[in-house]
Amino acid sequence: MPSRMVGVAAARAGGPAVPREDDRTDGGASMSRRLGVGAALVDGVLVPGDVALDGDRVEAVGLPAAAGGRIAAPGLVDLQVNGFDGVDVMTADADGLAHVGRALAARGVTSWLPTLVTASRASTDAALDVLATACRPDATPDGARPLGVHLEGP
Image (cartoon, rainbow, N blue to C red):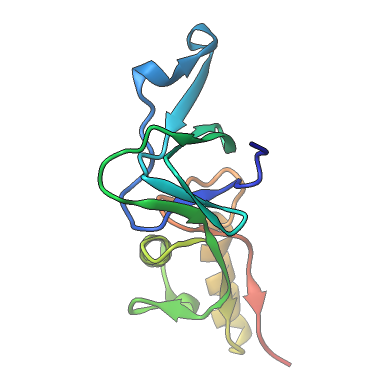
């Protein structure tokens, strides 16, 4: 099966897949992990069975299904998020942005574009300072990943 489902996310929030000892390959040098799902959406077709990942690549689909009826599907990308779940991106601190990421992930979003409205230079600079840290390539969010920043305005 081709590795077309990069960034697969469980359709129902349940946390990250956990590597299992019996999923090791290459004598422990590489670590596969299972999503723990009952089916996966592949090219518009619901394929029964679990999904194995090797890093961020799909290694196999159609493996013996896990209990619980969860379905793996490609994650959603939200391209304009001014705020979510009670948090305004323009005034959010790092904890607020992390909350937005977790809340979006619980609804199937794997990545998002924080969007700042037209505001004073001082307000925009303050928001960009907070977002710069959240958007760093080495950041490890525990929810949806912010991709960059969208600036609205004239």
